[in-house]
Image (cartoon, rainbow, N blue to C red; front, top):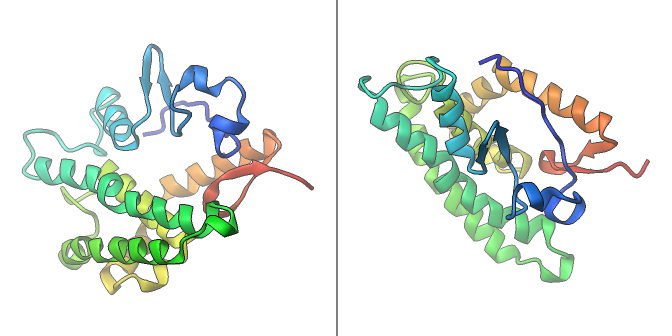
Length: 204
């Protein structure tokens, strides 16, 4: 949308390593969007808010468009159905100390995630983007889940249409711009981006 914004990159997890962050977000989670008096912490809601509050934008699908229902469904599918099982894969295969890791749990939830990709495989048989014949914030939501899957090493198991869709997403100029800003801000904050794009303190 080319909206001006200020990005703050915090060490992970911010509730432990970013002093004062809980005063802004009592949960200590990311993301946190501050827009005047508006405070938002839910990724899909932030996408919808930006595309409609600062629209009209082709990134949103209007209520009078035929794909409005599909748009809302895909927008929330990315977080609720695709990202959720991956958080358990991430936790029990990478983030927990070795003695607390649960390989079977991680494997089970990885398979759960991969099974849910059938919906994308079917949808992409006759289109480039999820709905309304254009790139929308629904693709941003689902795209993040595929980005996380790629970082977790699951993209090698993508089916053909999902893999092609992921390639379109990773080359999208919006993602390329966003990642460049993320790296620049992290470096300025004395952080480096570790696995899965999580900022960590640079020990070098």
